[in-house]
Image (tube, rainbow, N blue to C red):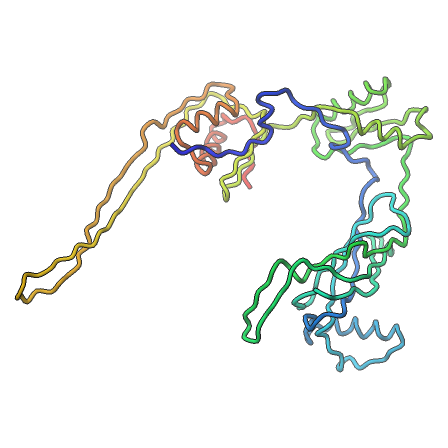
Length: 362
């Protein structure tokens, strides 16, 4: 009998108590975040894999760059096969100071076929406020290649039109982030129960009523007076507090791959599941008809078709009220349910209001 292949996240919760998680892994401190930087630049030194003649923005960009260097050129005389226009992106971490180096990514926006071997010319990287926070420059590292022939055939590995420049951006302006006398913790997965537990655990750790949940995702934490000059120490202590997070019961189904992921809080009311398999097999065998000797007959081939139909036997399972994931999996294993069949069964159980969990199909 075919076995059910089900990926169970949190399966260990069936045999062990819920585990504790650090607050550091559940929340973000408001204001302490990365900032996205973006810029437009040119990559030079390509081996004939740059933008084609029709890329007007690359021609104009190259001409403007040369003019700033005191070189007057005829736009119509520029050849671009060794130059490519790219978008440069990077992330500015919190508390990053001037002089730090950042990794940056370059992505072709023209019709260049490869950025391998190229070098990014000094490119200003702008923040959301329009100010320059870093300058990007350096040789591009591409984890792929593209090789083509004159007939149009070729071989491509990975994405040669996207590359990275390790430590290729130099921070010119830092973003000032100050921790106030009150911290605001933003939960990654908003939940009322988890917010209550989080605030209670912080208050219990310091012996003071300093944490108050504002809603299902926000907790305000007042900095005690003894830590007013030691904010880093206080944040470190808060991040190391352990709590047991809670979440809504959920079943996630991927219909394309037949993958089903369930949490350990999923419960099922009393329900009967019927699963019938109808198997139809058609076999065709050619039969040769040979005429008798000295006759005027012609050898012919006639197909012989055989059709057989089989329908599964035991296919009715009753799950009691409050059945758990383990009981569901065992019961469906007993009737030979495949992952793709399980997708349909779960949808039907949810439609019958017997599945007490969110069913998310992706």
